[in-house]
Structure formats: C-alpha cells, structure tokens
Image (cartoon, rainbow, N blue to C red; front, side, top):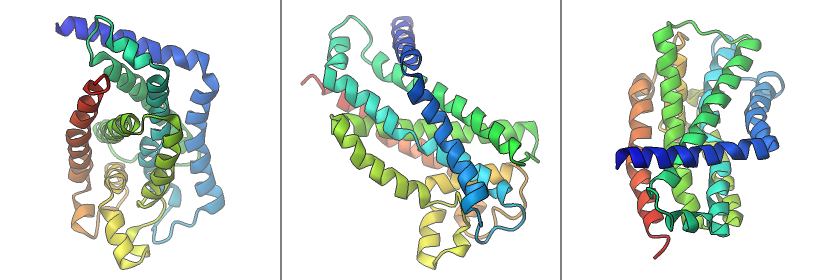
Length: 259
C-alpha cells in the first residue's frame, strides 16, 4: 500500500514538473521576483533602520525568509485551476492513492522553493553577503527556511480548496503582502513603534529570519525580547504548529471535495 502511494505521488510530482517545461515564463518570474526585491531594497530603498553594521548582512537572511513566504499565490492558483477544470475530480475517480495529488503538488513546490533559495543565496553572495557560521549552521538555516516554506505551502493548499476559484486567489494575495512585510526582513523591531515591533517579533517569518542571521554569525541579532533570544526554537516551533493545523485541514477538505 505504501509503495503504491509513493508511486502515485511520484507520478503526480512528474505531472507538476512537466508544467515547468510548458510554462517556463511562470517559473522564471517566480525566481526573478524575489531577486528584484533583494536588489531593490539593497540598492534603492535600503536604509535598514536600527541595523548595526553592513545592511546586506541583515537584509539577505530576511529576504530568504520572505522568499519562502511569497509564491503562495502560485500554489493556490495551480490548485484552484485543477479544481475548476475538474482535474482533481478525475484523479479521485482513478485507482490511485488519494493523497498522491496533494503530495505531488507539495513535492514539486518544495523543489521550486529549493531552487529559488539557491538562486537567492547566489545573488546574496554576489552583492557582498557572506556566511560566517560553520557548514552545519548553514545546513540548519536552509532546513529552517524550507520548513517555513513547507508550512506556508499547506496553508496555501488549504486556502485554495476553500476558495475554489482562481479569482479568489487575488484576495489572498492582498493579505500575503502585509503579513510578509510585517516582519523584521527589512528593519529591526526596535526601530518601530512599540506595539508594532512586538507584533513583528512574533511573526513566524521574523523568527526564521532572526534564526538565519544568528546562525550566519551576525552578532547582536538575537538580543532583546524572548522571541528574539529563542529565534531558532521559534523558527522550528512556528512551522510545525502551522503544519499541524493546516495539513489535516487540507486533507480533510480534499476528502470532502466529492461530497
């Protein structure tokens, strides 16, 4: 039974990857957009209020975390399009593991996220960012970033099935941007009004960004509140908690689609 489910999941993953070849522009845009944000804030907007030392060392980890949050709309759009065309209903009528559809979508998304992460790290190095921690710390940071993406992925899949239509994805896009920017990706919480800084410190993306900065060897980034001083713990707890909530919700919603 397990081998059957894995085979079906890999088949669905290959289906999602085949879309990359047919829609290369969408893939390129997904890779280029976070790079444009990084360069824009690094060279045009910049500033880094409250940041000590080189701003690029603070900015790049924040952008890596933000990149893992963005792209949620493309996941939702793909799911809602399959729902609208009846593709998922046809898959459900076939003799295949029902979980394979969602697993295939999630694996393909994680592969693209890993590729986007590599591109962003390369661009970060090109503009002067350097990793001062060890290789183990680097792997830990990458793991925390992908864990955040995994959590955001299942939020997107669940919301897509709730929305049901591609048109509703735009409403979610409007919400993703404020939540994404309500983090410490570009500025320190200490430079913000007290109430806003407190909210920013408890943002899951802030926890991941602070953890990556801490692991990279930047001094002083984890000083301040309890959330900042325990950023690595929170960077693991937040995504696990989100997955624990939204993964079963997505699976349950998927099982009810045909009812």
